[in-house]
Each structure stands twice: as C-alpha cells, then as structure tokens.
Length: 464
Image: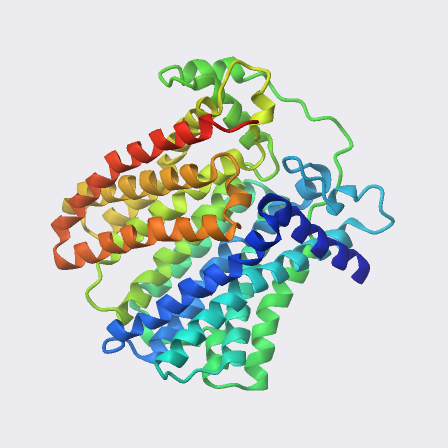
C-alpha cells in the first residue's frame, strides 16, 4: 500500500513540475509563506483593535473554510477511477488493471491530496505567519499552531467530504437534507455569543491542550472520512448511459448569446459529468453558506467593517471558481480541427461563466434581503458583478485555459494575489469610510474589459 502512495506522490510532483519546471512548482509554498507573513505583519496596524486570541480565531476558521472548499471528494469516486483528466493519465485511472480494491486506491489518492495541501498551503502559511510574529515579537507555538491549523483544514474537508458522499449516493433526494443543515445552523446562530466560536475543537486544543480535545479533533476528521470511504461510490456502470439529444434545444434557447453552441456543449459536459449540479453545491454553495454563517461573528473581531460588503466581495471572488469547472477538462486540442482560435474558445467560456453567475448573484440578493438592506441592493449587486468580472479577467489573463494547473506556478500565483488582493481590500476599506464609495467598484468593469482584451491578444499568440 505504501508503494502505491509513494508512487502517487511522485506522480503528483512530476505532473506539476512538467508544467512549470521543478523550480516553478517548488517556489509555490514560498509565495504562500510570503503572503502569510504580510498578513502577520499587518498586526502592526490592527494590533490595537484585534487581540492575539481573535487572530487565532480568524486563522483557524480561514483554514476550516479552505478545507471545506476542497472536500468534495465524494463526487469524484467514479470519475477519478474511470476518466482521464486532460492529457494526464494517472495511477488511479488504472484501477481496473491493478490487483487492489478501488477503495484502497481512492483512499491513497485522498491521503496524497491532503499531504500535498499540507505542504503546499498549511505548512508554508504557518511558517510565514510565524516569521511575521517573530519580527513583531508575538508569542505563538509553531508546532502547536501547525497542528491545529492542519486539523481545522482537515475538519472542514472531512465534513464536506461526508456531505458530498451522501449526495453521490442519494442524489437529489439528499439536497433537501444538505440544505436543511445550514438553515438549522442559521436559526441556531441568531443569538449566538461571539465567544462560542472559540469552541472549535482545534482552536480549543491550541488554547488549552488536553488528550480529550485531541481525540475529539481526530474523531471529527477520521469518522466522517471513514464513513465516506465506506459508502464511496466507485462502482463501474454495467450498462451504457443514454441521453436525449438536447443540443439543438439548448442552442435555440440560448440563441441570444453569440456563442450558444459552445455554451450548450459546456452545459452538456457539465451536467453529464460525475457530480453534475453537486459541483455547484459542494465547491461553491456549501463554502458560501459557511461564510455567511460565521462571517458576522468573525467580523466582530474587526469593528467597523460592513458585513454585507465583505460577503459580496468574498462571493465575487469565489464565483471565479466556476470558470475553473468550465475549463478543467476542456483543452483547446478538442477544438483544433475547427476554424477557431484560442480567443474564440475563451469568449465562449466567458459566456457560460456569465450565465453561471446567476447562482452567486441569487445568493448575494438573498443575503441582502435577509440583512434588511433593500435600499443598498444596487450598491451590493454592482460590487459583486465588478469583483466577479475583475477576478475572472485576471484569471484568464494569467492562466488562459489551464487555470487548475497554472495557479500552482509560483510566479503566476504571486501575480494573481498581487493583482487581486489590493483591489478587493481597497473596496472593503472604502466602504468602511463611506458606504456609497462602494460605487467606485464600477471602475473595475472597464478595467476588466481592458484586461480581457489583452488576454485575447496574449492567448491568440499561443501555439496549440
């Protein structure tokens, strides 16, 4: 078993290093550490209004949210075993020929991914934060912080993994149950005290280490993961799937779009792939619901920030993940025999992305209504649209059709953060000065159009 795990680890490194070179991929954690150190050094400014305990609170919930965004493994069981991702044929896809059970293979696949997240994100994030803390003479325990942040990450991952496995087994029947969970939490959080958030087990373990809390932390990670693996759907279909020809019907209904044929193809690819609508639920809606549940409490640590503005900005940034779904398994070589250019394909993906943005837009509208801010609806929607457009335009400029892999390049990721981070922070703090300054976000729209035009010129030079 260890030989399989070791081979998968090597395979992951070789796959990424073949895209960016050994140095480009190896420097990715350095960029994460640098960003984290800047976050830590910002305590020079915010140290007077945020205590160290509140900083720890924010860090642990940040890692919890990150884990929840990558925890949809339950939707990947059959897809990982049966399908080639792009041009990379991995060990896991040889499951029919290996004398090992599919669950053992997939278990190794998940552990391999978690280990990579540890070394690509959690460890460098902790190292960078500690480096800034040392400069500011703040006292934190490095090994304890690394342990508890990793446990927070794995807690979010394992809980969403369990929910996605339930969905994979029960399908649409499970959606009612899954959506009832945040509703129950929303009711529960109505009168919650801020200090209740400190009861997150990994954070409790950092603040007051004990064997009982450690066992609780491990149980929150291992029990949902084991249950998910037991009920993971990795079976192979014994019969062919048949679908009604919907291409013309969808194309005609989208006729007002210039790229309706491509959008119809994107929809059919998306809906017929494993997980289907579940990808929207578990890689976008579940993390967004978690943000909406916890954000009001977490922002109590930073008085003065407009919760709805921060939420709209966060949702606008998270919405760009939908562009990743559209290009994840679709390479330009699939279109090479057609009289098309790379910019044509990019424009078609942008049209599909614009249509998918209806989902996060509805979330933002519901949040605005729920907050009793109907008078601010135009400001919030404009902010969301501007941030979503800007983030996806930067993503396209830097990565083109290879978003999933390209962002693991140190240089690309650094450029991505530097292009987006200051802009979204400026939007948040402008709203703190005066809410109506949110309207300045409209300037991001022509800027986004300019970036997209340059993206098309840049990508048009690519040889494919």
